[in-house]
Image (cartoon, rainbow, N blue to C red; front, side, top):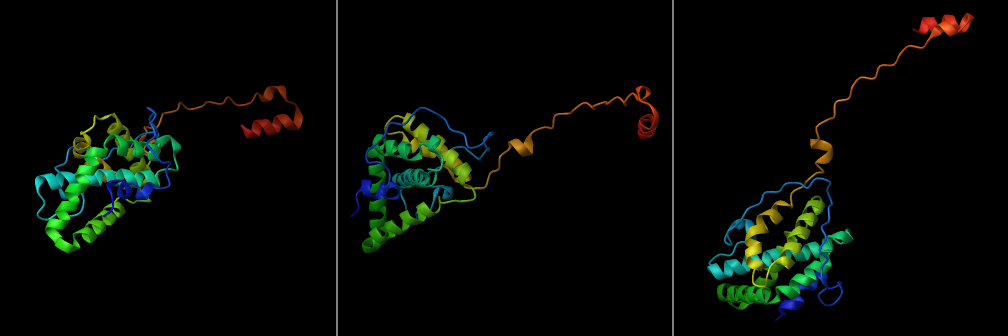
Length: 220
């Protein structure tokens, strides 16, 4: 059976080994951040992820934690185009900082799939995990997803140990919403600045002579 660490790090295996301390810096991919739907979500809400029939409240909570971790894992893989997001470093830091809570969620989900599916439980768990990763993969909405995931990752590092589940409940709705395409608002929603008309005085033809004066007067 795979350990929590080999499983959690498989999509970021290329990252430097060990947790790296994140820098306290924000990063912007948009001049004006898109506004995504936000607000707390219950662990049993279908928005969280794949169906979990027959799950207990503790198993639903583990499901919520695992989905947020999976989303941040995908971000660590897909968002490296912007070094300012520090997607890999922050994700590694989350694994180190919240490792105990993530390990408990893994064990709870593993037990759920064994209880519900018996001998096929481990294979069903692998399928569940693969589909969960795939459901966070995006190309068209990559910028909005990456910026949102980066903000959530920074908050996860600021949270005390044992609070990753509370963070997942508070931010999962926003992370899911960020998978929809968002455009730069600066060009589409800015109010045009009115400009005063420019008055250009006609040229003074009186200083010209002959043909040049006649052409000047005809032009005006």
